[in-house]
Length: 194
Image (cartoon, rainbow, N blue to C red):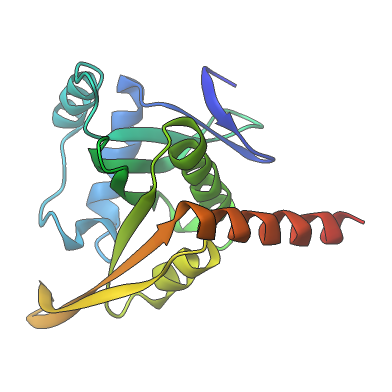
């Protein structure tokens, strides 16, 4: 593992490195159904390298983005992040992205998001986190619910894709709700092992 910040069973989180820009640039070109919904164009590797470099200069950081890496070989799978951090009120937005489809449905994203929430609530003492899903992305909505998030609102016509307006669904999770979800997740894992 290279410079781990949070370590799970199969993945760990670390600060982004310039070398990660290649993974994200390829993902932005190939992941139209997920990553490109909000940004409308692929990112270049050079532009992403500059963004990663700029990210490390912000003090205090208004967002923290971490690489999701496999413990077995240090391969970067994607990223998770805490955005628009309001340190005074203890609120922020979270997001996540896993690159290739071969990494989805294997629990890597769930494990990475658990590590991110642990970091947000335990290390930087945030109080509430929110996250957005654009319809009809039921998989992302279900993943958030597994993390302890609850539906918090809906914005109609928030996003347009392929000429169709879609709703933006907001979810949020408070620290105490997440602690309960974490305990349930840990109990489920312990039962599966025994």
